[in-house]
Amino acid sequence: DSSNLQRQVIYREGDIELAKTEAMAQQLRHLNSMIQVRTITKRLDQAQLQLEVMLADVVLDCSDNLPTRQLINQVCYEQNTPLISAAAIGWQGQFAVFDYSD
Image (cartoon, rainbow, N blue to C red):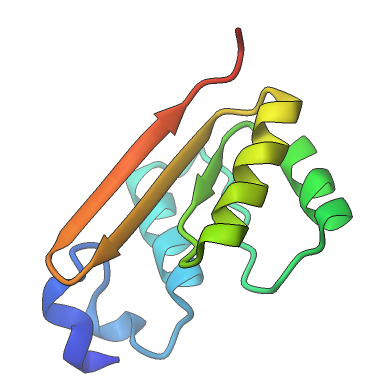
């Protein structure tokens, strides 16, 4: 949505038609061509989420609702997978890094 572009630091005009997840993945790949980014833009049940987390080295949670955030946190905790959780509203944002390795 072009009306939100002025406050989106990682997105560009050419990204407007893309899902935010895919646009961010492209930007991350431009920053580091050696990384592998897997995006998920659909709802997952707990079993699907457990499988996705098992395949990940680190999870970036950019979801926009508390139940989803809690489930992602729970699964990452259970699997000792590092979690970066981020949220923003208006001009304010926050992120937290959780390292469950010990």
